[in-house]
Structures are given as structure tokens and as C-alpha cells.
Length: 150
Image (cartoon, rainbow, N blue to C red; front, side, top):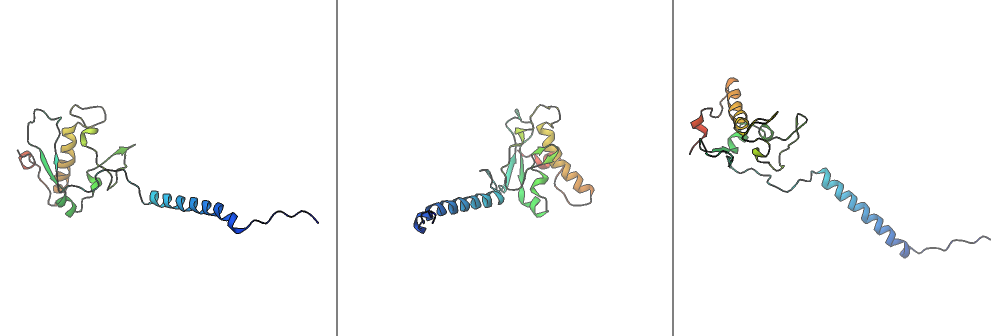
């Protein structure tokens, strides 16, 4: 008769099995976390009123603009209509992600292929209001004094 391998008792095999199960559970937990959209820390809920202002505008010609999120949300305007982070011509910013200050990309002085800060603000806000009015719908202000208040 040949030599038989020693019989391992279940108690000796359990630690290896537990390690394997722990690794599988950890892998599943990390996968679920990533699939549910782990987000970078930062603001994810908009303030009711956000000042659209920049220290870059000095001396200031007009008062800052106070942007109210609620009327825009009530009108069905999505967050991505205003907030953006373009990569290769596509907006990759998604609702709930931190919002960068406009002047992180748009600066007071124009740069190639990038709107300056003032025109970025005006094109975004006033441009949308004008387009909405042209469609025969009620829209926000388009006159300077209706937005810029001291």
C-alpha cells in the first residue's frame, strides 16, 4: 500500500478559508462603493443663494449678482446647464460633485480658447435668459441693474 497524505482536520483548514472569505467580502464592499459613485469630499448641496462675484474684478464696476437656485430648479433647469468641466468638448461634471470657482478656468484677461470671466458669466446667465425669452417662455433678467445690485 502506498503512503497516504496526512488527513487535515477542519480546524486547521478554517483560517485559510476565513482569510479567503474576508478578501472576497472586502473586494465586494469596495466594488459596491465604487459602483455607487464614491465622491470626492466637497460641497454637494447648493446654497439657496450663491453670490456670483470675484475678487478679480477690482475695482468693481457693478455690484455682485446673487444667484438663487430655487427658481432655476423649479423651472426644470438641470445643474449641468450651468456647472461644467469640459474635457475634449464634453461636460464631465455631474450633479453632487464639488463645484469649482468659475475663475479657476475663466480669468479676467482673455486666453486662447477660453472665455474671460465677465463674458463667461454673461453668456451663461444672460445668454440663457435671452434664449428662453426667444422661445416665448418667461425668463430671468437681462438688464444690468436687474442682476447687479449694490
